[in-house]
Amino acid sequence: MNEVPKRTFAQRFHLKFVAWSVLFIVLLCGSAALTGVNWGEFFSNIGQFFSLIEKMAHPDWKYVQIVIQPVIQTLQMAIVGTTIGTLVAVPFSVVAARNLVKNPVIRGIIRFILNLVRTLPDLLLAAIMVAIVGIGPSAGVWTLAIFSFGMISKLFYESIETIDNGQLEALRAAGANYFQIIVFAVLPQVIENFISYFLYTFEINVRASTVLGYLGAGGIGMLLQQSLDSFDYSQTAVIIIATLIVVLVIDGLSNYLREKLD
Image 1 (cartoon, rainbow, N blue to C red):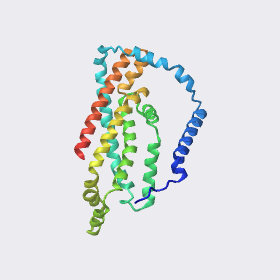
Image 2 (image 1 turned 60 degrees about the vertical axis):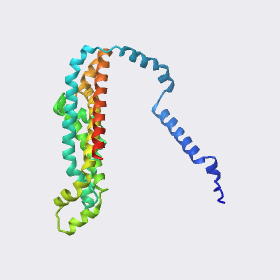
Image 3 (image 1 turned 30 degrees about the horizontal axis):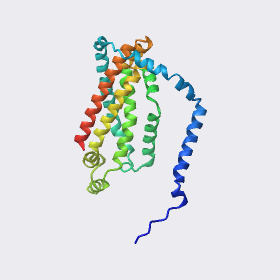
Image 4 (image 1 turned 60 degrees about the horizontal axis):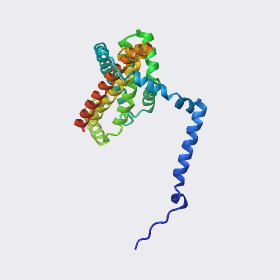
């Protein structure tokens, strides 16, 4: 008859779990103290949140006609920005992949550029683009393009590094050049992942473009800023509902397409 394995003292009293929990609480409290978080002030003013909800409980449905065009513009910004960023990301991700480029210096330089791009917050990019091209959707498109480039390039080269290298070695042994290896050995293995990453980034960009409007980068965000600045919460409610519907539709469509790819 098998004996029940004996547990150590630490296992019996779950000391690891307790230690990690205590460490997490200490770090949480320490971070809150260093950043000046006032928990009491938050809970004492939570009534203002419900006051805003009450003000937005009666949407101004006449405002829907004004919202439609900015919503379409937001989608256009996301589509164009994501597409431009993806097209630029593909060659960079190929050069950054460890199994395709053996030269560590070239690969390191490319990855440094990609890390630098990802370091820049999207709001900072939007502010820079507004200063360069002016207020309007053009600034939003270029902001989303740079953001997409940094994000997709990392996902792409990590996906390339997980492919079956046997096909690469076979083509190299047959005398195939670098371009032929990419077309016949790499792309067939990663094309589904590439499309999935594109759709995922597009979802993020639709949400991000709403926030970018606060800096004058076009889209529905500019209307949202105007309604909040004028304290017209009935219009704010319409904008939020319209944005929510768009995000839900895109999320559902994207999930459907991803399932078809699997």
